[in-house]
Length: 68
Image (tube, rainbow, N blue to C red; front, side, top):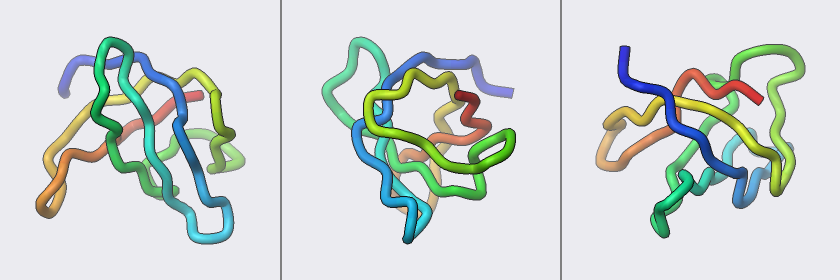
């Protein structure tokens, strides 16, 4: 498994189930989908601190194994 990274939720659309997380020390946000959020409920809030792994998705980097 990839190393865990800390970051903050930049934006998250609860209706559509996706958003972006900004890793600490980076200016490039990472895409996140509801299916990759661990726990219940599977939602995030803007500004929330999370940990996650970064993996290559279809054409972009994505946050996986997201833990609030």
